[in-house]
Image 1: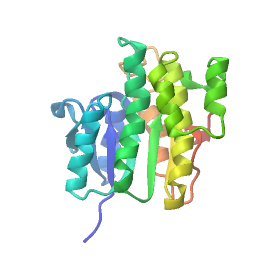
Image 2 (image 1 turned 135 degrees about the vertical axis):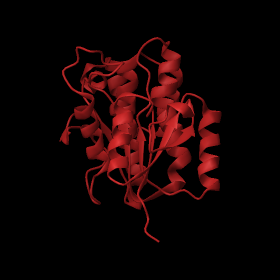
Image 3 (image 1 turned 90 degrees about the vertical axis):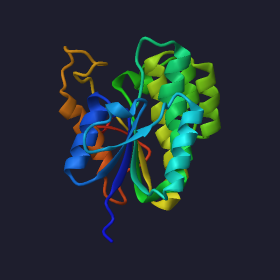
Image 4 (image 1 turned 60 degrees about the vertical axis):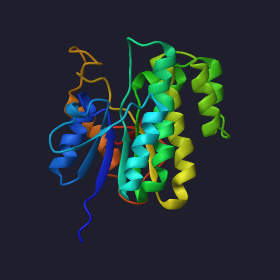
Length: 233
């Protein structure tokens, strides 16, 4: 039987996540939409209810996928919050969510699977506090360290995205023996609900940056931060 490539994308209810899902469906991918409200999943995708800020919701999703013997060729951790939430919620969704989801779904990832952490230009490491830079730059940084950092929630959106980019490096090392590629992708400042109408980039441009990470050929780069296919640390 022909195997259709399967991608799980969180936050497909709008913006960049929705466009990434649309393009992959058009290319023949089977797309699982990780959304809080299944009714918000884009056409052509399979809705999978999950709140990435809730560890019980993540585990319930993982249990469903395991029961169906799903195999994921790509995981796109796109869901995130920017404003209207305190630091605790921002770090729960933007950092602990991708960490827990990737760890829970790791057994379902196919050899050479691509994992994308959708980061932001506001998460540029050099723009963070000296203390955060030191912690995230530590070559011995572990997922446990990132969990502890997220519990502290030291800063807002930008700091959380810097931690997410560092997380890509940690997961990349962990999953490299299985041929998987894990990268943080910056879609740029786009005209989404989050980015606002005055942003310089279209949703399509932002999605194209993310799709580059999904389409990487076996043996491609891993553990880096990229924008439009170019290093973007």
